[in-house]
Image 1 (tube, protein in one colour):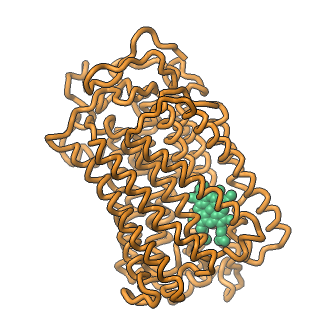
Image 2 (tube, protein in one colour; image 1 turned 30 degrees about the vertical axis):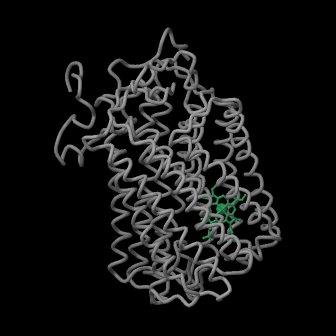
Image 3 (cartoon, protein in one colour; image 1 turned 135 degrees about the horizontal axis):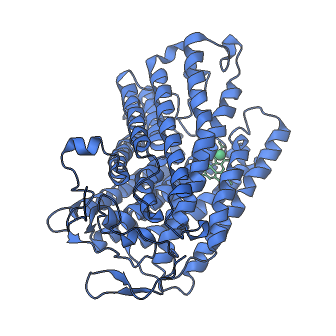
Length: 551
Ligand code: HEM
Ligand SMILES: [Cu+2]
């Protein structure tokens, strides 16, 4: 592009046609493409979930065969974890927002960013291919010896390559984010002027870079074990299946922080903007992200309390696991202190965030029962675990993702979604979510095991509540999607630059931003200083009045 952008030339119209999208190196377009594919994976995983819940309507099952049930929960888990909840916030929203929030034109390595998108897409396609070659029935954790037996066929090999590629994509995104935050911050923007979403993405990127290679190696070794019988994981060739579990959880526990940290970052942004108060305890929230990233590397053994590892290891892992509660609680108290005496505005992103507080509280605290040895041993492999991790992954991460999509939607699309639809969707998602998963805590404590296609008849009532809940939750999600997409039509209202009165830099760019993001390169400003913002009448949003405090 040459010269000044003329009015109306946004990143969406800068370059037309499919080719200009597929070969783009613009972080905003890459973010939008990720968002499209990621929502697609959520729908796919959701269809599997509804099939599972329908099957469980009767204690004796009946909808699908037991083998098909195993394949359904495997792909549900694998798609949701590897394709939706791990890349969801960083790759889609992070790619769009990060360069704007530091006041840069793009990420540090735009071409690597596009490569990362295609690696992710290839991984996603391979998961679909496993369906065609007979499916995968190992559970998303792919534990040997079952997973690497000769009888498993091609599905496991393809899935391992898919995990490897999706992991590579995640590493490249992490590298790009760290380089961008280090090198491309606006003049005057110090580390403690970064919006907390970026501290969260930074901490996430550290985990992506340090933990994901272990997953990649594990997938590669599993692949070779299956083909060449190296004797690593399979007892029959002299290997040790527990070794696989160590490798797997050395990545997959930190991976839960790849999921939750960006979600917490969104919460920090939204809670401050919609309470009209600077975030309380900025440095504590920023540092607790780093603390979670570090401690998260030391707790993987809590997934292996009953694997036969030594009692000493169990004790140490139990103790370390409980430490994670400290930085998580620090964040929660600071969010609540931010809201205290704030002028809370109940727009859609904030309603989603309020439901996040309720659900994350339960999800985090039930994690304590699983972290303490005495209670984990009876609860292990029951529906209590299923309820716990859905509270964290769905109730906290997916809901924060929805908050973030609504929050940045006006910036991404230049359109305002309908608030009434948005708030209704948030309430439906909250109600449906609780109806789905609270009964699972109850049947879990009563002893209902996970991963079975049938169950004892006394659990049928609770299971039916859960199935009804899944459909209410789905209705909420469909409504959210409808509300967002409808705003793109002719009737959709145009969004001003700054509809929420937020102070971070992305709101100084046009909605939608121009190809190069900012017409004039911005100076770093304090991201939570609302004193210089004034609301215009009508739907014109907020503008900066007077001189802003340069950070
Ligand atoms: C913060 C986000 C979190 C996410 C996304 C998450 C996710 C998960 C997942 C997916 C599992 C199931 C693993 C399997 O297939 O067996 C799990 C189990 C477990 N989680 Fe979490 N979790 C989170 C937080 C916590 C916290 C805060 C704790 C403890 C303080 C915790 C402790 C555990 C333990 C001990 C298990 C193993 C339970 C068992 O197998 O008996 N988790 N979690
Ligand atoms: Cu863990």
